Amino acid sequence: MKHLSYKYYPTALIILGAIVIWCFFQFWYPYHFFFQEQNQIFLWSWDYISTYTDKPGGLANLIGDFLTQFYYYLFAGSTILTVCLLIIAGLLYQSLIHFKVSKIVALALTLFVMGFVAVCHFSTSYRLPSTISIMGWLLLLWTVSMIRSKILKLSILCCGLLPCYLLFGSPQVKNLQMPDMILEKDFAVDCEYHFGHYDKVIQMVESQQRWTDQMIFFYNLAQAQRGQLPDHLLKFTPTQLGTFYKIGPETPMLIIRNMNELYWALGDMTFTERAAMMTNVFSHNNRNVRMMQRLAECNFVSGDSLAAEKYLRILDKTLVYDRWADNVRKNGKTIYQQKMQMVSRHDTISITDNAHQLMMQLLNANPNNTIALDYILCSTLILKDITNFKRDYDRYCIDTNNPRLKTLYQEALCIWLAGTDAPQQEWEKYIKRGDVFQRFQQYNLQRGNPNFKDTYWYYFDKIKAPEI
Image (cartoon, rainbow, N blue to C red; front, side, top):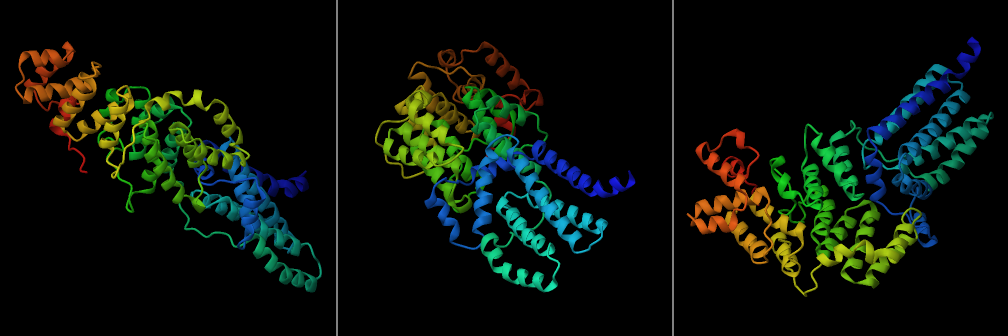
């Protein structure tokens, strides 16, 4: 019994370590896998696969990128990584044993290497091909260790170095880092929003103790999709709408990756396409399958069927998104019916990425674009620009006989009416909520009182507006 325990305890410890790694990446770090999967594209065609022969490490890159595409599926990322680590552990442990290293030392080195490679995967820039590269070199080491003749060992080692380098290259070396749980949460809200799980995005953000700009950005987008952006705009201060960003050389990468979601939600297909192209440029090897989807979508919605088909044909050559592409061809008009109604059909030339002007163009073309309406009104309110808020509210709510009676807007109108000493008939024209008017009178008796922190009046008096 003791002999069996001594024989199998290394295997048991290695498997236990693999289970711990799998559980961590699956339950605490899964969205890093989704991010890596989306920031590449693997095409099942000889023309594409042949590009992997252009530089050393082609086989490692080919296998790694091929497997990375399956990170899209639940449980796949952590499982693929764990299997790779088990192969590394098996090759290394057996090699050390063949070289007459003691079991304890061999086990310690094996567990260390397993853990080291797992820690490398905490960084999104450390990709699976590097782990495949390590496997390739360990395979050479294991092959050499199996040979008893020292001369033959040396001969095979020397003969195998060049082919191994050409096939597997050299593993990527990165500075080790702790798991970035804040970035993981950023990826989580990004992915869940992309999948259309708006309620989950809202629940995830509201349950956090600390919020990043990206979390709040997607929180507001999710609320806008439900038509409730004005109701929750002031829940987090400072808030992030994304309408004040301009894409340029100093724009943070996370912002560049997110802007296409804002323009898509607003209904501006031209700037959606531009933002998606920018994201592609800054992705790994300038390839991003999620942006390929978005480019196909925005061209389909805008009516450019030839451009849409170009991207759909690319996605046809993937193993994960081919059915998605086929579904867009067959049912796209139904899927994107509402989005097509939001698009401006007028010929316009935009020489700026000023979101306010873009939203005005969209609303002039379609006054029923509620998302664009809420974003244009909320953007001016965040800046405390009551004059332009009133102008836009008149233009897109009063003049269209479609007043949007949200508490936030009623509170802002109270400020404008009070500031301009408006007559009674103006108050009656704009303020339709008696409870808002009564609370405004109460606030004026105790301005700045924290009991009114949920109101726009408190924000207007106490919170600093963002600088643009």
